Length: 467
Picture 1 (tube, rainbow, N blue to C red):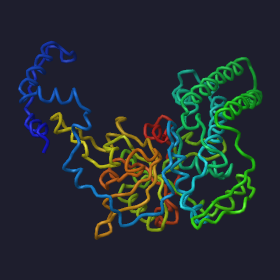
Picture 2 (cartoon, helix red, strand yellow):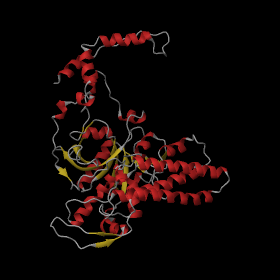
Picture 3 (tube, one colour):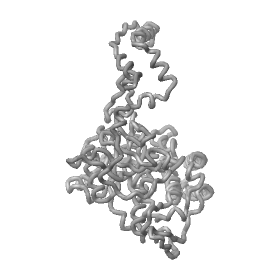
Picture 4 (cartoon, helix red, strand yellow):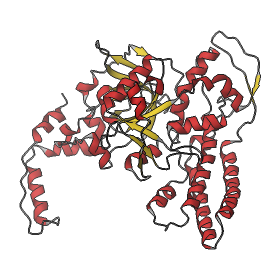
């Protein structure tokens, strides 16, 4: 065992505090007591030296746990190749298209295939701009510090999204292969163009609100909105390129056969290669701060003005894992959302609880329940990925899960992650499952009248900004 950890384990000492006359203040007397308690620690300078001169995660890496890891899976689906969202917050879109890429690989006898993320991102940005301006028209009477208005103004043009954004965009705009609309500098690194268009949308907000104060009608505001959107379209074409209305598709398959060139529109390409894969998916969440077996709907949780808000059925985590297992056994990859920043050893692609032993490093217990992490803003779903496989025990229960990420091949294990089952319990919040795989009882629960969650619900704020 690391000698630092041996020393640190001896640091646990009882703490006593002198009662201060003013127990609200951080007094000199209380600070002196902290110092005295610290001085009782055995050889603290060793830890000061270690922590001040090293990365805390590397110092706390649990080697005993690390060596238990293996890379084997007794069940896994076809891989389509690791994608890279680069400097953008489009994990939801990359994960969504990664669900469908293998379908085209099978149909076309290809070893890899990628649908264009830039194409759908362009239309997502147009739809979000239209929706934002519609919200500004709806909220035109609200004061500038109104809670709902502020939520929209804080992030009018973000990259974040959700599974149902993907399906809504595909059904409206179709899809194209990445060769028909490849990534650009701006689609891969969205910070500057997002900042510029967000500024423009806020300026449009000021104008619309002033028009309302000047007595202009809602119809007049909406007519002005159309010309505003023309500016957004122009900026997006400069940044992403013009989305193709038609394109030629040609490919070489695994047998080295080169296809004849064919002309498509985005929608005819979708109808030929993808429409039959667009089954009815439902969204399951695990949020222990909410009532299980209840249906929830998140207000204003869409990217289009003419689509419904997100609806989620809250289930215990074991039930969600059962459905993920059923999907994989049915040869279906699973889109899921988690808190990717927690207990993630990126060098080896490990999602494993206790992989960082901070308690041994500092002599302080950092544990907190999943419910309290959500309730007190410590954790929320912030990243979407794809389940591709599982490694099960003799009883069929998964021990770990194979995860396909969209951070390129230089992170994790060449782009893949190993998610251990206990980590799934603690940090997976949402999974999207083919409705056919649900029990009749759980399908019936989707007929409930949903409880409406406000736009400022902390769990939703993570979902709204998956990146």
